[in-house]
Image 1 (cartoon, rainbow, N blue to C red):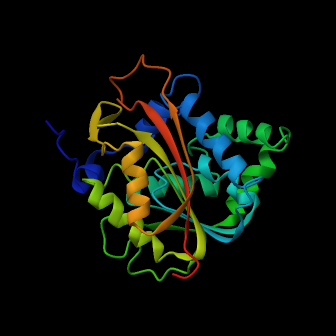
Image 2 (cartoon, helix red, strand yellow):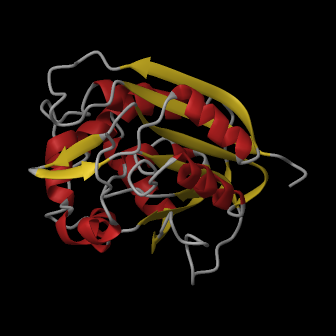
Length: 264
């Protein structure tokens, strides 16, 4: 039996970015702190250094209230447009960019990325680079015909999305169609990097339950191929810590790096 689908209206009313941070990213106790953050940050560090992905503009789709996935990208892109569907998440992003005293504290993640880059003494520099490179915080909607309407969007060299698409997409067709819409946001030959979880049906934010689209590795590869991308790399890592499956039931993490064909 399929889990009930969480509608956008429920997210608008019930999703708390503070609870999300505390549930998943709080140092030492967040569910995603450790296994997920190690996985995603190492993949991004490699992609934006030895992987050679760089350029002028990067679009970050569905950031939630988070900035951690942009910390490596900000070294190799001149401009970053970040975005989220929820006003409360965009407000948290703006707070961090303004250095508000009550902004979410990502220092532990910034420190980790600086260590990956052998630059552990430059936390403030890293944060300032990212703040300078983020030029816009926009509303996006994965289910809309054009996800950023009515804002005109330039074509980007790279689009990144982490832990996002499984929330708004009801089924594999929705997921594939969203990937197709991303084609219009990319330069010919542009990169797309998606990282998230597999075989997940739900996640809690505080005491609020939200649905998640269950995807397998085969589903991912099928969706990217049907959406017209050239797959560069797919990486799947199993979840080792099964102690808190009641918070979210994913069993693995995935990383997909693909490219828009140059003749599109």
